[in-house]
Length: 141
Image (cartoon, rainbow, N blue to C red; front, top):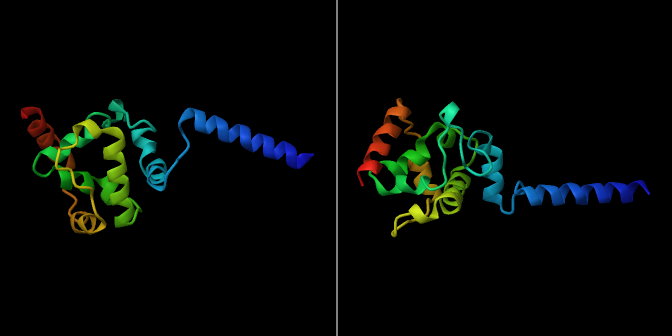
């Protein structure tokens, strides 16, 4: 009897997670949940009061300006995460295609582990300045 109650409880909890959209359906989404959504939230909306940028409709724009592709790897949340280079490449690709597919350049090339490995060690000292410069470039397009 107790095992039936446990099974029923597990099913109900699983359905409520799935209904809320909080259930990871693939490994990269799980990596996002564990490493990114604490600040950027499940829907990528960020938190403007804490200066956490939103991803939807924005993230792909960084790939259209010089330095933007490197920036997405080099922001501290990416570069300093515990993710392997392969996993980080996968999460970035998942985020781009999930939160900003319409903004991806026509010639979009997914990140690779080799590219992430090359870019990751070069975290800019003034990341906020780099971001502001990139946003100005994006606005001029």
